[in-house]
Amino acid sequence: MTREEKNANEYLRTYFELNAQYEAYAKSLGMSYSTLCALRIILEHDGNCTQRTICEYTFLPKQTVNAIVTGLLRRGVIRMVELDSDRRQKVIHFTDKGRAFAFEMIQKIKNAESKAMESLDEEERTAMLTAAKLYVNRLCGYLLE
Image (cartoon, rainbow, N blue to C red; front, top):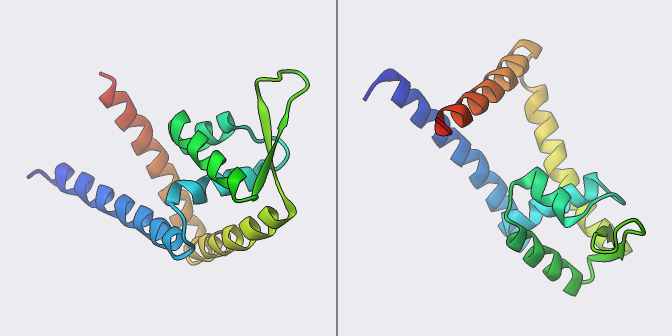
């Protein structure tokens, strides 16, 4: 195995470990990681979030997002409001119960993420973000060759 293959494997392992942490947190709350991601996007785009928005940010398939949204509707966490400009599009809004529910769990994640970033100095943060973005862009390019 080449050094580059070992590095790629190590990066992938780290990526999987990060996802496993989010998955474990979601499971501790009794939900899937995908649902947790959707709740975060709805919260961050409050009043301007559609199922398409969730798909664009999470890269989840439409069918998965629709199933998540349907489940959240059934639980009374969200409500849907048709757009005046396009009645086929519906904006997702939290119910009062849903906003409190989502805010608490998402805030815990954001606090942990902020603390983790704060533990890195500015040079480490910049290097990590720059290298990760560059790696993803190049990987996508090579996969499309």
